[in-house]
Amino acid sequence: MNKNIAVIRGDGIGPEIVGQALRVLDRIAEKFGHTFTYEDVDMGGCAIDKWGEPLPRHMLDKCLASDSVLLGAVGGPKWDNVEPARRPEKGLLSLRGSMGLYSNNRPARLWPQLAEASPLKPSVVEKGIDFIVVRELIGGVYFGDHTTSEKNGEKEAVDIMAYTEHEIERIGRIGFETARKRRRKLTSVDKANVLDTSRLWRAVMHRLAEEYPDVEYSDMLVDNAAMQIVKDPSQFDVIVTENLFGDILSDEASMITGSIGMIPSSSLGAGSRGLYEPIHGSAPDIAGQNKANPIGTILSAAMMCRYSFDMAAEADAIEAAVEKALDAGLRTGDMMAEGCRLVSCSEMGDAILSYI
Image (tube, rainbow, N blue to C red; front, side):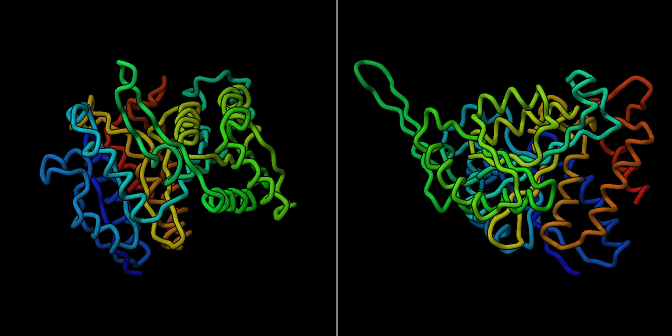
């Protein structure tokens, strides 16, 4: 196969971790007889510095013309005081919206080799952690109107959270279909005791549940879900929820697995083209020091192979290589443990390459 991949190296540690993922993709191409062509795209803080905006139109067009997009990370304190409309994160929101990527899928899996790195009690960890958060990505408060005005002598800020039935239904179906491919259990998370959007969310999900009698369905309020994820994560298989709740819960879920640096994600829409990225940030405190964990980005590349390119064997090869590197006791600083060997970002990439 010949695939054109738009590559957003981004800010902070982004160029380092993306560089290792591209090395892995090149090895996969060599081993399986594919051709991957990379088109560099400026987005985030680096794009603001170079072009004056977080995602220039000509850069967005490169993404829209690609077969899929691989992203490192964007943002950092350097751009904290940029006006809201030009912040690095606006580029990411614009990209998701323009590509029609309404489903963000974030697995929370505890690799057995990292069990001791989980902050949870061993009695909780030994029950297993393996679930996925399906997050609605282009609706809700992140895409609503945001206004700040003067009222009664003080500033008042208003953020609008809105959802339509079709937006809820399409992400709900992703949740049910994902559950069918796993352990057939779906938990829908909302705040229906307070929010109208959540009451509509729950009504649509209940209607959909009738079409999936083979999936065990339940509702859970978001505050309870936050508690249950740390109390007994083994109870979850697939969690489906709206944008804001999904952002928070998936970050919480990543930390109980031992390291946020291990977690990949995919953002998908109606077609096969997707956006693939690790869920962590740009980590400016270690940028340029060759200390970052590239595994989340490498596993994101594996997800790209699996879900956008229909390359299951290639994805399996990447994931198996990561498993072998962990079995060998290799660890970057974020997941270092007694008896293991500390390696750099590039050394972890070297090891994973050697196992493919």
